[in-house]
Amino acid sequence: MVIEGWERWIEADLIGAYDVKQLRAKYANLLDTYLAHEQISKQPVCLIMLEIGRGIVPIEAKQRALRDLNGWLSQDAAERCNEVFYAWNGLVRPIKTMIEP
Image 1: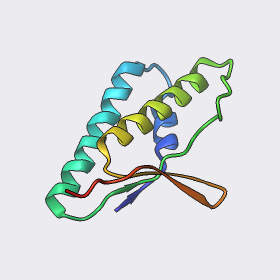
Image 2: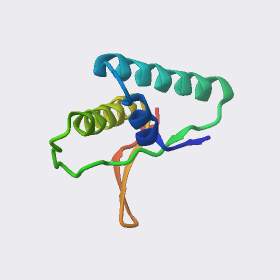
Image 3: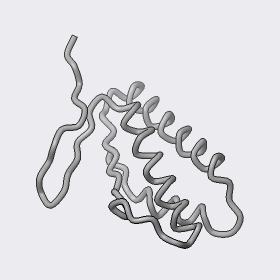
């Protein structure tokens, strides 16, 4: 299973009133659901997460929240994953790799 489009889901959640802490918890729970699915099905789950902004902090609060939530989601996902890779312009760099027992 390959899951992508996180930034669009976060952006949709930021329409209207929102609570950043609640949204972070929502996405952390979603990550746990995917992890449980992976463990039950014995099929890998691949999360594709975009880096947004490259360190530029926007003036608009919702755009800052989008970048913050996307970054925290990436960190939360990396914490749960066995393997993490950074891909940019066709180059792939391992960030975290599974250690064989």
